[in-house]
Length: 425
Image (cartoon, rainbow, N blue to C red; front, side, top):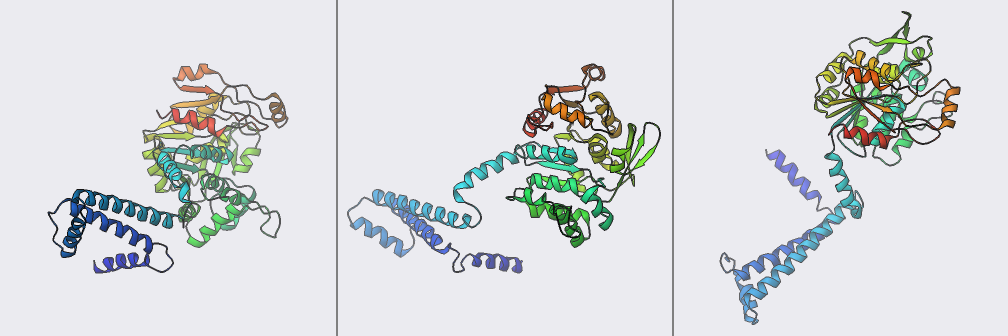
């Protein structure tokens, strides 16, 4: 107990060090409190026990001023001096960490976001990072759960070298939620030269460095959360390395996310090896407390479905009281969802998850013809939509314009966020 009191005293004394810009304003505030006390003493003789206070009251009375008047003036002047001292002290302290003029706006924004709904978004790739960027403008109670089965590019090289889960999509989502100025740009910076560095992003190396430092990938992710000052939280679907395996329509078995995309034939189902990787407790708690769980947008068999394949996570989603919403991709993906319509996307998600989504978001507005022509050259086409099978299954479909107007056909995070949050109500 004494040690705790000593620490508190030392903490207080630190505020009195020279150059802190605090002591002068403390004295001003104290002078204001003294004047307020003397004003009260003049307004009421009761409780005046100190001789010097009594002398002050008698002095003001000898001036010929009514005690009620001198007491009121003393109290109001003291109140003004006290307020001035407190305000100046607050500005002095806050100026060291932020612009005091921006503080009201920052507090209002923080409180508004803290009052937002509890949302968990699962997926991977640019689809999830873009969605998180939209959701963070509406709620701070946000958790991103990222698929970590990618085995290509920089991520694949790091997986083979350090035996870690895929970090690429995780890096993009961390960057999307970071509140540190220019941190998203830094996290996504890709080295163009340097032996061993070329092709890697700073964010990928950052996460692997934290893993090497802590020796535990889950702890590395927690440390990244603290360093990057996230508006929300980002976690891997599993902190252990896992390999994605697919069975094609013809019965062939394909191992590895990059090979699944390249394999001829439609994907029938996918699973992880090992089949029961652990899930971070933070993810399970977020799912249990969520008001809204969002699946997608993103690559169906290599991003969205892998994000919820760990059995503990699937059971948590199945038991969660949250509204479960699946966002269907705007375009098909060559080698993965060729010829699949919106209902086929939905059925694949429901069969792998073991729970039917409560609602499905489908983009139904016209798309730019020039953009569609460019995508067609790459074998990508708009995902076809027919309401009849959804109606037969009793599934709610939310139709609308959710795409970004531009050269690239992708979901608009603001449009998507606005409609998704309506599903909470």
